[in-house]
Length: 408
Image (cartoon, rainbow, N blue to C red; front, side):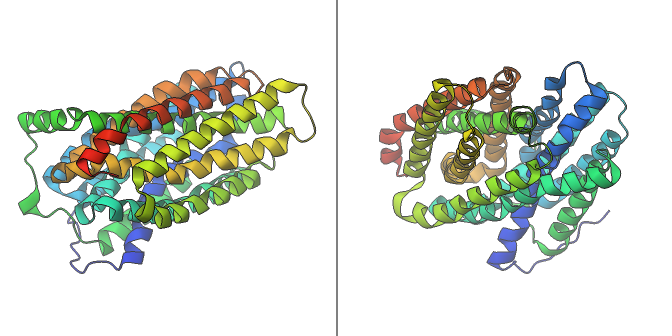
């Protein structure tokens, strides 16, 4: 199949919207499943409902591992062809998942689906780095994240609607439609951002040298570690929120609407970051966000431990969730830009390593914390608080090195 080759650059607004849609493949693949988890647990794993959390984390694990492959291939072959193949794999795995009769087959299909989703995820970052750098790159990613948050806002409601009409298996057919739309837009409208003269041969020695360069920078490794902790606490929330709404607060039916409120409240942080990052810098904003999340989690934990459940506990939890997702807009785009800033000459591989390592470590962090869920908020809030505190401490250690390199 011949890949279309448009040459006219997209306008800034369309470019941002396209990247937001491609990046949203991940969010839609996770958040549209959230209303289905209790139903899927009753059908596929009634004796161990916590295992259905793996529908989220196994997908993320596949995405993290695939990211390490997709980036180097895009450095060698170009961005667009890699996205096309990745979305084809994503759609094929979604069709297998739709027909799965056991939890094991479903999880295997979700893992492969994550492998496919890794292509639009990592190539999106590489395309931004191909065209922008420094604070402007962070600004672009802020706008992307602002549009991206609209998908988590509506995805649970879409998933709930599909489940009500056709059952949870039909949600996977919606993933196929989403993937086809994203791939078609990119192939037909976006010029290749990584031309042949800038491509690097896909050789083992080249990859090893680039990998050593990425992981040989103490500053970059620190940013990757902080990003891993930030992703980890988000995956804890995503894995446990459906159970918490259903079991602790008896709001399973209204969950999509509450989650939409959380996502929309969080969406303002991307716009705020796009404004503030040009004045205060990426590192300061990310550090401040982690510090604030630590303090809010500590306050939430103290209130949970203070006494028996109260009528206002759900309102408190809802506000806490809004703040947790608000911090996403002040951390992820900034940390990605900081980590990739000195690595523009190997943007594809750098984006792969940063994305893969941070995602896999985040899953390693999130699964044990989420599995500790016991019908109370204590394990979740404690785990999130520790993640945010450690990320904040790591960011504080970068102050001197960041000042020396000018990466602020």
